[in-house]
Structure formats: C-alpha cells, structure tokens
Length: 385
Image (cartoon, rainbow, N blue to C red; front, side, top):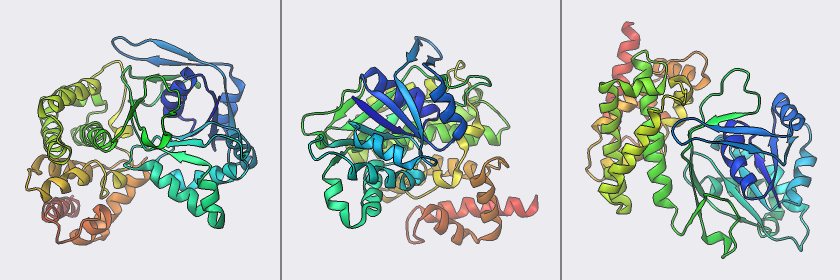
C-alpha cells in the first residue's frame, strides 16, 4: 500500500505521515522545499517525539520524498499507483497541488481501485475545496478523472510546535491527536489509519475543533503577544489571559450547542482538556508561530468571525470573541507577511472598508457594528502612537 502526502513539514511528518506509516502504507512525501526533500531522501528513519505526560517516541521508516516543483511528472507517477493522497499544506495552497493530483488520476489504470483523497487542513470542507480545484485543473476530462477517486473531508487536531535547532527531520509533537474522517465516501471500505475515527456526520467535529482548539489557540497567542509574553504555556499561566480565552470558548460552545445540539457538559470537559494541552510546558510553542497569518484567521468562516457571526445571528453573546478580534488587530510581527499587511490595511482603509474586506461581513450583519468599533479603536491607537 502506498500513500502520497503533500506537505513534508512538521505536521506532515509528525502527524499525518506517522499515522499512515502505522497503517502500513509506504509514504511518499511531496514538497517544494529542496533542502527538506533532500534530507528526507537521505534518511532511513526519523523519530516523532511526544512531549509531555504519557508521551512516547515513534520511529518512522518506509518513506521517501519527491520534489513536486522540480519533478512534477514523478509526483503524478506516484499518484497513479497510490492508494491514498493526503495534504497538509494550508488551505490556500490546495490549488497548487490540484494539478499534480489531476495528472496522477489521468495516469491511473482503469482497473485500479478509486484513489482515496483527504485534505488534512485547518479549514471547513478542505477536501471539497481540493476536489473543486482538481475539477478546475482537469478541464474537459474532469468527470472521467473525478470518477477515479473518492473524496472525504476530515477534521485534524494535533499541536506541532516549531522545532528546536538541529532537530533535522525528527519532529516533537504533543501526545494528544484527533483525526475524524467522514465515512460515507468510502462505501464501507475506509483506509486503514490507526487512531482515526470514521463518522457519518463530520460537521460537528469540524466546528467543535475549529471553534475550540483553533479559536482558543489563536486567542491565547494574540492576548499573549499583546502582553509581551513569548510562550503559549506562559500566556495561559497569566490568570487574566486564561479568563479571556475561557470566556471566548464559552461563547463558541454556546454556538456549538445551538447549531449541533452538542452536550454543554461534554463541551465544558472538552474546553478544559484543550486548555490543559495549551498549558503543556514540555511543548515549547510561541505566540508568534500560533498567531501568524492573522488575515486568514480573521476571515469570514474562520475561528473568530465564524463562530461570532453565528452567535450574533442567534442573539447569543459575542463580547469575549470580539475582544479576541481586538487582540488579533494588535498583532504586529515584522517576520509575518500577513501581520505586516494587516497593519498596512488598518492604516489605509476606513473601518467599514477594513471590516468588509478582511472579515467578509456585510454591513447589515448583526456582528458588523461590534467589529467595526474595535477596528476603529485600533486605528485611532495607531494614529496617536
């Protein structure tokens, strides 16, 4: 059995690639980073180290790498004989991997079983997005090629921080992980992935994860950065920040109860577990890493505006989520391209223009005035700084 995984970074090696290996798949990593591809090809194994209580080391073997930028045909050839294709590249990059998957589908034998495609991204319906991009790349052949594959959405959760200097291709991760996969597309023949959970309705799992783990992680980063704190674990050690993050997650839980009928008591336990994961002192993670790409995180269906807009539409509280948005507007990191762009747009656009462009909210939306007000406050602070 063979799996082609796009994105050989820390998440690809330390989470998706590890579980595929444990499922018995030969893993072919596809990436565009020359040095990383060479390092993977030069190694016979790498180690995934789980940091914190109960953590163990996992040795991964049976892998290789292909440079998809330098050798696109080689990637297509690998896909032609693969059983699974997965991604961990970021939602905005899916359009760049789609042509390679389309080319691989075109080369598959008519007798081959359908290729099982799963995009493992922090986004709702990422596999649907990837399928649409493959359809676009395939052009007139789209119907025939898409019939050679099945596409399943997923919800993935594992904290993989920036790696220590000199780690090579070894990866440090947290012990906890969750990989939920919709079962329907596989028609009773799902892939063999140890630890993965196959579910009929993925929607509640995706939004529970995005609106709790991702909202909480990013809120911790932005409140921590505003307070001048470097580590995520240290930020949550501050009682005021911990209270602000907890309040935001209580609001997202109220949305999850209203939207999906999830049990409030179970969500309270889940929130506690998530915050305990963030507090793990053995997992060295920074507010700069977690807070990067703030424009994406402030977009319409992401971790702040997504649940806050749903709450506002239902007349539920949004005060704590709006405070988290205000903290995100303060995120000013010269090393992060989106952070620089965020601050430039705050200086060049009106508050109404900014909210419309960045968050995608319509001025008539009930959340719009609250977000406009915190944007205006940030713009006033920049003018008087």
